[in-house]
Image 1: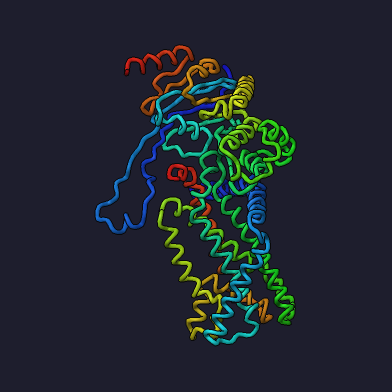
Image 2: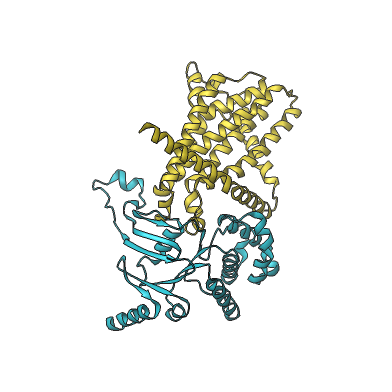
Length: 245
Length: 272
């Protein structure tokens, strides 16, 4: 039997009891405020083998991002269990640890440290990040002076240089202008293709997913609707929406 | 059964210590970076850290000595001790109430024990408080107040202030995440507390007996400010019994606060 990297067992997540309340509403209304219950995932189970690349597809708001957050360990589960077999994990999103008031350079340190990387390791790799980001001297400026494109480049560079055993990618396969896009896509591909690395990708770009993934999970209505070989699941997914039209 | 519970507690405390080791360098670096940013983004940069408490001191001197014609020996030093202690407490509280919202970027992308956010803030404001206490030492020379060995008692008292503030901040950070109006409530509560902490008057002499004694024992901030004055200005011994009792309460508040934050921290992301 092959080694597992991620084990998701009967996971349910809801946002029910946790609506923000205001004192006025609770003190001055006779009716008790309604507790909204919003289930996002219900009894989801699957395994991912070490080195596997798994895509996750589904409509907007079907719980894809929540699932990634749950695996990254930043959101609480109502039920179930997620076992990462002691692998370290990073959620590749575009704003890790960003503090507007400090320089891009310091932000690299903050992001790295938040990912649990030693300060000395960050020092060794920081030139690589700066070079990849193409920001040059702008790296010493405060983040609030950056354009949105520059932010994306920096965030992306930080994420791809600090590698972890498991990478969770939420819609960010490539960023930036045309030139950077190609470069970032290639870098991402290189990262994903590493045979020891386990990757989960959430994306709406079905063509890219077909190219990269070993398996695909289709989430629909809080549950896994289909899981299996990339080609088949994506075909079913396309047909499903073609029929709906 | 009981042994199991104790065992579980030990595991939790171990986790707290491990997290502290793992993330304290982050908190320190982040605090430094924020202080650096504060310096580089204003014209008078670090001078503000000195200027702000000094200006506050002049305002209080004006109000108390000229408007109310009250007399207190070495009043500038006296009031500066109050301002420094109060500023630390006040700013920590106000920062904590909205801390989770302010750090949304971090919370939605990576796991970190949320009390580390309070730790980072405490580094920033402790640093500023130390500058302020440095100014007090300079003022003491100007007003010819002698340095004595009592100054060493500064350490246990500041530590007490730190512990109590930290615990309260953890609790407020937790509730502030869910309750929108907590920000307004804490502003009012702080204003209220401000006047009962003896920042610019001496509780011992200005409030009639026995209320002064009671206030000094029940309000930790008043107790700490009064004790700082004793050790800086009057060369008096500290009240060790009250100190020890507040240590116990402070550690209890920290325990509750950190436990609360650990228990619910992964739910915060659902409301920010």
